[in-house]
Each structure stands twice: as C-alpha cells, then as structure tokens.
Image (cartoon, rainbow over all chains, first blue to last red; front, top):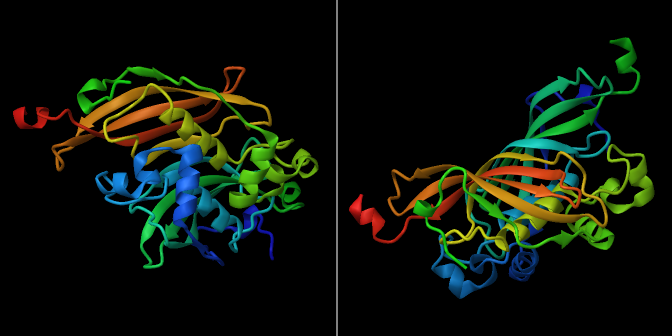
Length: 155
Length: 155
C-alpha cells in the first residue's frame, strides 16, 4: 500500500476500487429505520407507489457505502480521506436490494494551499457503479491532502 | 402534521427541527467501523494526532443523522424528502462525542418542472447545529416536490 502525497496526485490520475459491496434488503431497511425512515426505504408495498417504484436505499446509505469502498480502494492519501466539502452529489439511479456496488475515482484538480504550506486541496470525482456498470452516485469532493515532507521547505 | 405541496413552499420559508439527537462515542465508532474505518473516527489516541485533533464523527454519519432530523422536522413535503442532488455539502466543524445536534431549514428557490407538470424542484438549505448553536454541517439540496393535485390542470 503506497501512501499518496499532494505531489503524487495529478489531474487525470485514476484509482480503481478493489472491493464490491452487496446491498442487502435487510440493511437498506435497518439503515433507513435509523437515519431515513421514509416508506420507500422501509417497505416494499409502499415503495411501489412512490417516485422510486420499488424499494430503494437511502441516498445517505449509498453515500456511506461509497465512503467504505473509497477507504478500501487504491486511493490512499497521506493523512486519510478528509473531505473539506463537495461540489456535486447526485444519485442518477436508485440502489436496489441485491445490487453490488464498486467505485472508480479520478483526480480533477490539485491546488497547494496558500495559507497552509504543508497541505493542499484535491478535487476528486468518485463514481459509484452497480453490477451493470451504471452510475448510482456521482460525487465530486474537495479533499485535504498533505504535501510530501521536505517538499514544503524547498518551494 | 401538514403535508406541503410545491405551492406551499416559497423562498424564505423556514422550518425548525423538532428533535435533537445526541451523538454517542460508541455510535461514532460503530458507524465508522462499517462505513468510514479511518483512525480519527475509530480511536481517541490516533485521533489526537490527526487533522481533527480528537475523535470526530464521519461526515457521512453527520449527514445521515441530519437526514433523520430533517425527516422528523416540520418540513413534510408531499411525496417525502427526495433529493435530486446537492449544490453544497460542507462540514465547518467536527462533531464530537456527546454533541447534541438539531437542524434548521430554509427554502431558497422553487421551480415548477417543465417536463413533469405534476412536480417541481425546491432548493433547501439545511444547517445542522450543535448544542452551542454552531454549524457542523451545511447542505443545500434540490428536492423533488409534488404540486398540489388539481393545480396542474388549471395552469
């Protein structure tokens, strides 16, 4: 496992997700019961007549699973994956019981910090795909990443 | 409980969150173990030397708790709270063990859909505050909300 510093991240660099997570119906319902108790996340019958036309995972469940897939992926920035905020978060398709999700990430921008010389911001787009290769979530986040030790002194 | 249609939502209308949720250290750690297993969310000692300078909830935990607070709030749009996507999601301050969170929401924009006459998009900013009244999360989302039945025929 290679830890990545700001200097290792360049626009266009891609990272594959190593693992897949299967979304079980029971976890869709238990996650929703705690965090998003709306009928279309809790009950098959009620979900059928909703905008989702069937049971669908809470978007926050999908986002949380995506974070797990990202932490387990090849993308290992120094200091961890620390989000400063997001530019975009969309759920183009619902996540259904039995779906198997994986992620792909791409670096879009790298900016050394002016006020904090030891770190920078990296804009990364992470796409969460289902077993058919269709995007169920797209998010573009700005992450805080450390510069390589020693580099800051030289610049 | 009054269900709100697109016509009921006007820019500037605010909704208070009725409940508070206390974030327990054990739940910070168990959420992180499942969805965001990084040292600063799992272990006090490791968290002390991280960017968070102490144990902090995963941002996705905060986002999920915020959703629960929103579902339990006065904001009850017809068809449920269904996010089409987000314009902004930020975590200005870490959430610490023992913090008590609540939400406040404000309608920013209302747009009837051109392609789907029975619904529209409502831009809502939801701020999650801790017991000191400080914002720990700000998110601005675009929600799909139904028009009042009968109104579409008249327009």
